Length: 153
Ligand SMILES: CC(C)(COP(=O)(O)OP(=O)(O)OC[C@H]1O[C@@H](n2cnc3c(N)ncnc32)[C@H](O)[C@@H]1OP(=O)(O)O)[C@@H](O)C(=O)NCCC(=O)NCCS
Image (cartoon, rainbow, N blue to C red; front, side, top):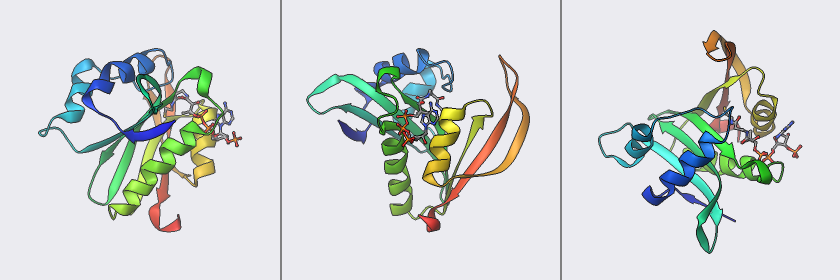
């Protein structure tokens, strides 16, 4: 398994994985295509793929990149690959890149009921810094805001 920067050819596989995943953040095709547009906000997208078969994507993570702070916008691991450390590997690699880029903190929003994602982030050292009431729709639910200071890594 190889964790690498996403390439434009990955977009259909990323979209397919996202669409199969109820708790993922759902984006339009245009938003995914904008990942590689120079005019779009800066983002990092990493994928977990088979080393010798680009047609198999097992997970991805996408973050929006500010100068001092990055925001994780989506992370998905294929259902059959979960609980093998892939989510932690993707998020860990993203945190490594953020630290290398001089970023001081990384944050994200997560559904309160999404215990798998919350445990993953807690394990990586994120802590809860706030809550957005009724932030999500279908079903309505609060978002927890989690943050990690890169200096504690
Ligand atoms: C959240 C998600 C990315 C985790 O990926 P993963 O590859 O299964 O995670 P890992 O195997 O790296 O797990 C790392 C740690 O997270 C926690 N964790 C992961 N899944 C968990 C679960 N179902 N229940 C409880 N804890 C869980 C554990 O602490 C785990 O460490 P451990 O296996 O040593 O106990 C995956 O469940 C997923 O794709 N979910 C659907 C998409 C989603 O909800 N994304 C988040 C949107 S904000």
